[in-house]
Image (cartoon, rainbow, N blue to C red; front, side):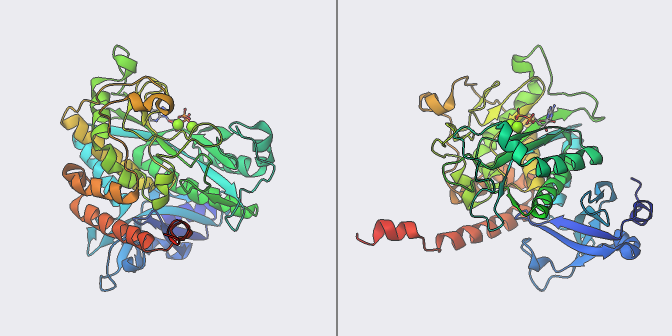
Length: 435
Ligand code: ADP
Ligand code: MG
Ligand code: MG
């Protein structure tokens, strides 16, 4: 599309724009703006009371303005009257540092100063569940190894195909859809893109999947571990770095181990070095830590890591190099903020490149069987508090993401942890009443 949202509305019959920004907890916040008012809003932004969302602002702060980025506009395929557009948050004529899309844009600009153009893809797994959230939606989906279940995926054909048709129409180049490893769980894949485009698509994908599921009387959840004993919702990220023009993959070097160039190894080294700290962002909820470090699921494997290790084409490690010129970070989960996920990857990777970080020894073992034989590789944080403390200790990562961002994020996430810790559970009664 061009850059003029009013013209976009006229050409496509759009009646409303949904000017949307993402807060620190990954919540998507929007105002519905009639097309006749969009020209001014495109210039000045839509006003929001920032305190009312998770951005660590106070009620006394001036209005925050969400200025739409026209390059991100998408007419809702399931409701063409409306177009969604991602916005950048401004206050007092300055970018709000802790607003996640700004954080990512800053890191992209930082990478560009080193001639780096990051491209990523994500695999945002989800469950289709009952509207009240208590059970999976398909009572016949009970196999102990349900991955790729042909019959079960066809029972949800109407939902899956509708979402895939929308991705086809949007030109995202989707290429496969499957029933995932847990009962009720699905994955849909589309082609990787420039990192900001992937973050916008990831946000929109979550919105679209939830909306289409609701249309069919279902509910979709990206919660990291919605059901005990079943595989959780991962959100693996695939990463490559290209030259400034985005034409040549500088991670690719067929003469090197696993086809990963020295630059790629250093970027990976940064991810390995900062892994325990970056988990605070890639695994941002209390529930996230029930997916990583989990006991074996009914299907036989969690498919999630518990230790900071890397390998070739082997899905039992935190990082997998599936083929030349890219690697897969298997740590992130469905709760990861689409913008902060990419921002923290760039922050850690850039530090790795600048410090020529060594990713360390590669282990080609089955980590679920033989993980105990690995000596010296750090265990991933066991809970959100551990991860927040690791993040707080990691001065260079905090600085790379921005001091204002880091202090806002840590403050709000500690509050969330404290709210959880002050919650009384049945478990403690069961284990403490008769003590
Ligand atoms: P998996 O084998 O881990 O399930 P998928 O095929 O589900 O992998 O997802 C792979 C993702 O990685 C897709 O989004 C794909 O476009 C993306 N991808 C492939 N090559 C690259 C690359 N060079 N850089 C970044 N992402 C890539
Ligand atoms: Mg996949
Ligand atoms: Mg994967």
